[in-house]
Picture: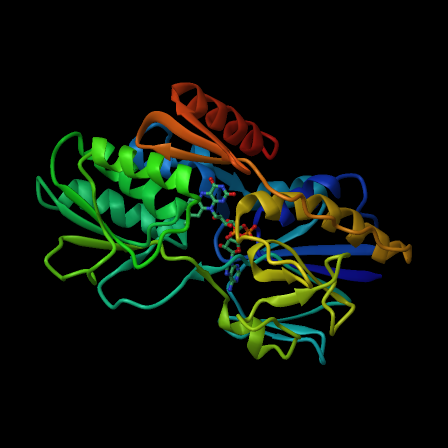
Amino acid sequence: MTRLLLLGGGHAHALVLLKFRNFISKNLQVTLVNAGPVHTYSGMVPGVIAGHYAADHAQIDLARLARGAGAQFVRGRVQRLDPAAKEVVLEGGDVLGYDVVSLNLGSVPAGLHEHAVAAKPFEGFMAHWRELLGKGPESPRIAVLGAGAGGVELAMAMKFALAGRGRVAIFSDRNVFPVAVAERVRNALERLAIELRTDAPAPSAFDAMFRVTGASALPLLRESGLKTDEKGYVLVDASLRSVSHPDVFGAGDNASLEGAALPKSGVYAVRQGAVLAENLKRVVRGMPMLDYVPRADSLSLISCGAKYAIASRGGWSAEGRWAWWWKDWLDRRWVARFR
Ligand SMILES: Cc1cc2nc3c(=O)[nH]c(=O)nc-3n(C[C@H](O)[C@H](O)[C@H](O)COP(=O)(O)OP(=O)(O)OC[C@H]3O[C@@H](n4cnc5c(N)ncnc54)[C@H](O)[C@@H]3O)c2cc1C
């Protein structure tokens, strides 16, 4: 019997479980390990904060998804991966052995700030936001660290949810958007009276501070001894297989494709998920691997608090209410696949 261990219930593994329905037999044992019982879909988190969606509309029930595929679900946090012993150790000490392991554990916000709540894990972040709304000051002063797509989306969602109360400021030392998109984002922030500070570190005179800085690698990846890139992400080849350990696969934020500098975004995790599912089936059957070929660019949709969004792809950009409805349709369709 082959034991396939799926670590992390991110976008790619959600897709793997969907595609493994009717594939799992008595010769194959599949186990999914995830820190919590649900996967929160990042694309809809700003919409939850803005009040457009209930939190569970943005969540996938992983235990149910695993059950539907005939896989086991283990709720636990992966602490250590030992590819030499082919073992995974969970927080609390449980040890899981495997024949093939696949990593879809995501990433964590970069940097450290002792007073700031990290945007990930989203479940903790959303709980913190609810508490601030319920028990915090009437007009809270909020600082958001990081002005990437996630940072500006969350800042605008918070300001929109406060409906004219409070103050939101974004602190960042860089611009990550192409010129035309950066201008649209600046205008959208101005319309909501959100301050964008690129010249100063965040002071501590805030009621809440949230960290939405760019992605960084989970330390356990580098500590495992798997070959990683210079940032600590597991290096995989075109078949999404570890370049150092062929029985280890990886997709999404926690993996870096050798020779390609892909952005850490859910769009890539989804596209890799389809190839990963096929290759995990193939490795079980002893068949040759498929290659994942990244597309040159991808559609980006930045929600602006209200039901309004900025769309861009390559050198093209546009904005309007239609862009929000487009995003809403794509996001809800994605989550609905797993219900
Ligand atoms: C506010 C915000 C909005 C964003 N919006 C978008 C967007 O609209 N479009 C887009 O393409 N990208 C977006 N992103 C980026 C996106 O979140 C990531 O690129 C994407 O989630 C990566 O997907 P993944 O499948 O690799 O991992 P994830 O979606 O992060 O999933 C990883 C899973 O692993 C689990 N896990 C983590 N560590 C452990 C552990 N040690 N043990 C067990 N389980 C663990 C987590 O609980 C989680 O369920 C956004 C990011 C932020 C912060």
